[in-house]
Length: 362
Image 1 (cartoon, rainbow, N blue to C red):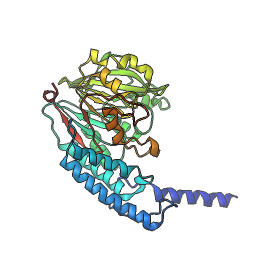
Image 2: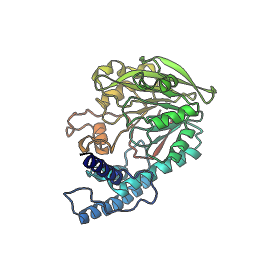
Image 3: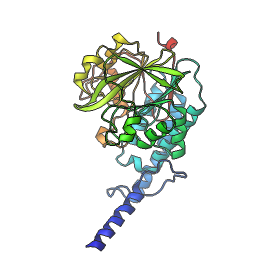
């Protein structure tokens, strides 16, 4: 019995090693791994080659049509093509997809390292609902997760001045990143429910009062720069604390990051955010409850959607760009029967950036 148990554990470990994601590894090859027993090896090789070709084609279109706040048919085509590639059941195990994600995030981190912002804000979309926002005075990170090597992760953390974590789910924070910020003396803001089982970390993390329309000052960069932060008492579903963070920088740029906000009762305060603050950029999770109503309540100058194509989600919950697009247009094709909204929308995939300027959005 003991020998059989040891053999079973060894077999499980070998299988886990074989199928662990290759993100961050060098020299990713088009390996002929038999992912799906319903497919032959030849069929798997074909899908690998197809993913490689289509990702290259999509990348070319994305470069030709960079992120803008106006509709671009070529860009929408590129994003919808990504949806099709990433909704193949075993997409994340395919080396071309892993390489695509790795390369785009590496390029973004390198770009963040050398980019200076004179006016407005530059906003990078990383993986999932991770964003980095840079103005001339500060660099703000939201919901960072580690999809890169240790070296790249620390390189990114070194470029940021503060980290905000929306809620407890593991696709929105990682302990290694939290520790890296704290080790560098940089503030980490999180909801009260997070880190309760780690007293040492809990004492180092800042837990602001979850209070609607009430701003607190947070000092960053060795107390040289002050930020105004409102921590709205949001929720994912019914009872999961989800901080919806509004930050106002010294330049007067106001950014709202929603985390995984989804709760109809919270519209009590969402409906009037725009009456208290002049919001520049709204960073919502693409599947939030009634995005049109949220947009009208927050009244931002521009919306940059997030959380599309989260590869850790089940296939039917892996929100595609085409849904984000239809939610803006308003479509009976969606179960939610979204009404649509008129606010400018920027859709970006992993590693892309958008420069926001107040002058462009009067």
